[in-house]
Length: 93
Picture 1 (cartoon, rainbow, N blue to C red):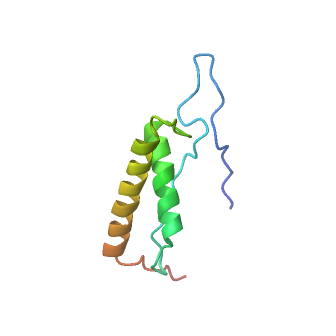
Picture 2: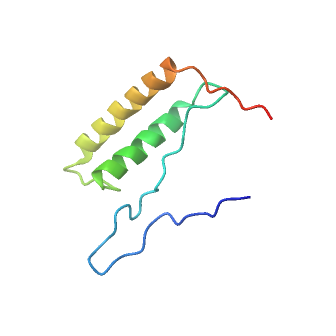
Picture 3: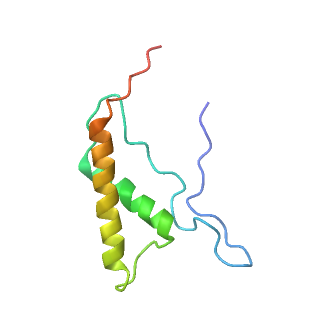
């Protein structure tokens, strides 16, 4: 049975924006049975993570360098982790 699709952002409350507004709620799992993960997917997941942690969707000029550095560091860490782990075992029916 298919799972229902969630909205990408939560509705606004009278108190202000809710946690996760404008940010996807789930980060895609990158490790797969076939092994290698494209670099652009690793960087996209890192960007999504930094957006979630920082609460910033589009950084201002003042925050851009810190934001870019965080994305680069998380991309590198994620790539090292994926390179060290074996591919997932595929499920057999």
